[in-house]
Length: 116
Image (cartoon, rainbow, N blue to C red; front, side):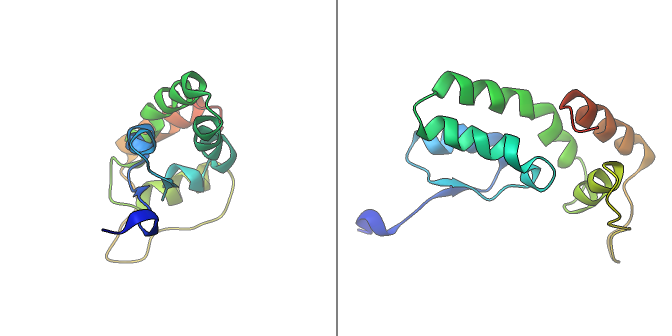
């Protein structure tokens, strides 16, 4: 009914390629807050027909995506930006700082993704 007037975007970083493969136009991304170039390249590769390369980036991102969603958004994003040397402070109430256990998970995922 909408023809070309309806555009679908992935709202989940771990589902970008599946959404693009069925006609999606892009993603509203959390991971792009800390790795914008690398993750936007995933979409570019897909639209350029380099599906294997896009798939590789999607799979490489899964550990970090999981870490960024281990607590309520934007708690992990603020923690990640702080770990990267940006001073984003602490979340405002009712949100609280990320748990120490999850900070370790996030730190390791960011290290594996070459962000720190």
